[in-house]
Amino acid sequence: MPGHIATPRLDLRAPTPQDGPAIWAYASDPVATRYMVWPTHETPDDLDDFLDDVADGWAAGDDFTYGIVLRASATFVGMASCQFSDEGAEIGFIVAPAYWGQGIAREAAGHVLDAAREISSIYRFWATCDADNPASAAVLKALGMSFEGCLRRRSMRPNRADVIGPQDDLIYAWVRP
Image (cartoon, rainbow, N blue to C red; front, top):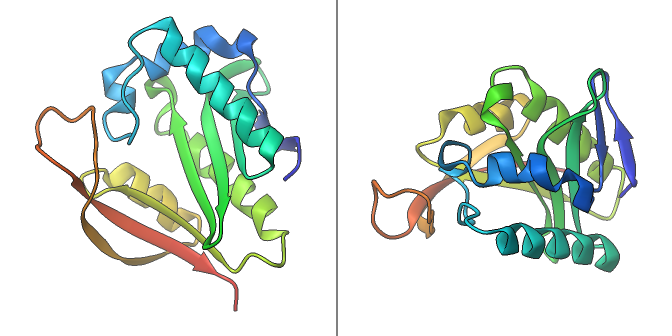
C-alpha cells in the first residue's frame, strides 16, 4: 500500500504521535465511537497503545491505517484503514462527528479501497458495520460494495450501553471477477 494517498480534498497518510490530540478528540468521544468494535479511549495510555498498534501494522505490511487530513486546513479528522488477511482485505473508517455528512468517509475509504484493489492477487474486499448504523452502511454502498447479509450476534460493541452481548453486523463486499 502506498505511504501517502492524495484525493481531491484529502491527504491520507500514516498517523504520527503529533496527531495524538486530534485522534484523542474523537477516539475519546462516545458519540464518535458508539459503533466501533474497540472501546472509547479513556486514558492517554489507550491512545499510546493505538499509535503503537498502527505503527506495528505499517511495519508488518499487513495493516495500513491512514490518517485523514483535510488538505485545505491541514486538519486531522479521522482514519481509514485496510487490513490484509488470508481472506482478502478489510476496509474500515472513522470520522470525527464535526465532519460527518461531508462525504469524507466515502472519499477516504474509497481511495484506500482503490489502492488495495491495485494488488491483483487480492480477490475479496469487505467491510462490516453495526446493523444499527445506517450511515456507515450508506458509505459502503457508495463504495460499490454489495450487501452480502447480516452476521447475527457477531461483534461486541463495547460502547453501546443500550444493548447486551454481541451485535449484528452487516457485511458488504467487492470481489474481483
